[in-house]
Image (cartoon, rainbow, N blue to C red; front, side, top):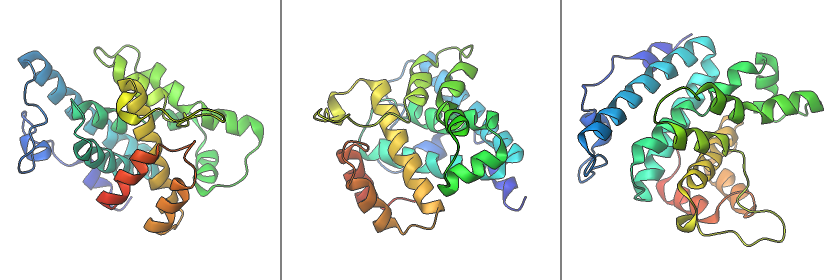
Length: 220
């Protein structure tokens, strides 16, 4: 359980400014008061949920924190509107794993071969997360980002659609796909550049623009 207290440290002040406003950044600029309150509350709530996730299954807690940091960096680098929504999606993206047995989760993260029924359980975790969040107000877009996190960039025979021309839910899903899988490769001991090269070699799986941007910010 070493390191778990860092996942449940006291929440920042209600404006969340220290967390979200590095020099020159204004992620909440232009939001109506109601939307600003919603953003702050959702970020606070998802941090608490992240702490609980870490207590229930530490490996998932650490993974979620790593993915969230990376998504936050990417959203800022890509100058995405309402970047807090992408952070909320990242913080909630792994909760569906709680329905997958710990042993199956561990073997899946190692890249072990799994029987078909266990692979179905693994592949269903984004949809389970989406359903678990169905009753949370104003999370429809975030839920769809989470549900699409395993979708490839394109299928055989198709030309990938540029990232900036995709709808917001698809953008979020592809951003999660790249960030989660990068973190997974790093957890398996793959060096940063090797992980990026491996992902860049699969342009139908991972959005080339996102992999290129990830290379510029250096990962986590």
